[in-house]
Structure formats: C-alpha cells, structure tokens
Image (spheres, rainbow, N blue to C red):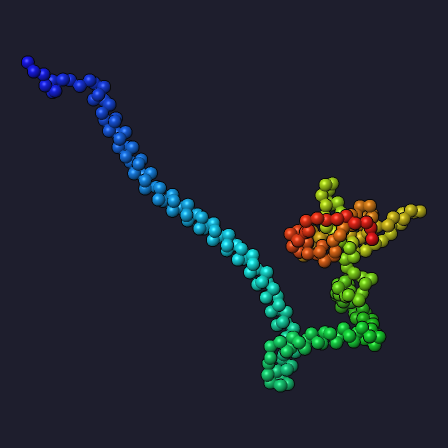
Length: 252
C-alpha cells in the first residue's frame, strides 16, 4: 500500500519551531527596514550638526570682531556728541546754522587754551584764589578735593603725584599665588627706635580698578619689566594681555 505525505506525521518539534522561525524572520525584516530607514536620517543629522557647529563658530568669530569695533564707534560717537553739544547751540543762535563737529572742535580748542592759560603764573594765581574760595564752602570742598586728587593723578605735569608709579608682582592672597599690583606711594612706619620703610601697594580686584591697599616692605615686592600701561592693560583685559614671559628686575 503506497504511503502518502499526508500519512507521514511531522515531528512535534517541527510544528513548534515553525511559528518561531516565522516570527524571527519577520522581526529580522522589520529590523532591516528600520535600519535602512534610519541610515539616511542619521546621516542627515550628522550633516546638520556639522553645519550648525560651523555656523555657531563663525557667528562667535563675527561677534568677537565686531564687539570692539561697535564699542569704539559708540564711545567715539558719544564723546563727539557730548562735547559738540556745548558750543553748537551757541553757533546756532548766533549764525542760525548747525555743523556737526564744529562744537566739538571748539570744545577741544577751549580745553587746550585752558591748559595753556593755567600753566602760566597768572593762571596758577587765579586757580589758587579759586581753590581758596572753594575750600571754604561746606559741602563743595569735599567734592572738589576728591576730584582734584583724581585729576592730579592724570596730570602729566604733576610728576610728584602719579597715581601708579610702578607695576610690580606681590605674593597674594596666599603662598603660591601672585597678583599684579601697583606702587602708589611710600611711607615710613616709626616703631620706637626702629623705622620701617613701606611701599603703598594697590592691588586691583577687578577690571574697574576697585581693589585693596597693602603696606609692604621691599623684600615682599618683585619688580618686573612691565610698565604701568602694560599692567593696566592686563587688568582691563582680565589677564588676557599678559605677555608670555615676565622678567624680574632689580629695584630701580
């Protein structure tokens, strides 16, 4: 009697494995489809990230270049406008016209003539009389004295009262740390029979020149090859303008 395929009974394991194989095949096909769909998307994301990073860097470079230019233009424009407004109304009332910059030129000429006049003996005498009167006014004398000290610090002809005499380095605030400082004066501390020579040292704590004042001996101060101008540039630039090498110099 012939045997047909229907009469051959499949093993029980075959019936159990067939659905699992189908599931594995379907899962593999789904994974391949998903991976194929994700490849273009991941490549697009990488390209977008690269373009975004490049654009961000170039934008930051543009801001870094334009920021000092914008600040310079703004401050210069404010300076011109501020001094131009002093004499421009006078020209407008007298001649009925306004030329921008003419008031600024007049202001600069006026300041120059003031400097020339008060550098003479007659101007110094008149200035002394004016100061004598101002110093007898109750409130005004304190304001004038404070502003006079500031103006004396920037007066190029007043060598004895330079605000910053020398740019130095001191050990501050603790061992192993150093700070940029400026010598602003010298004094003598009298202790009985012994006198101690001290330097008045000013240490800025931020870029607007607010800082601390210390009295230090010469041995606590390291003199450097930095000029006062270079020291101020280091403070204003938050340390970015410091030269690559600093040289310790002997006491001048």
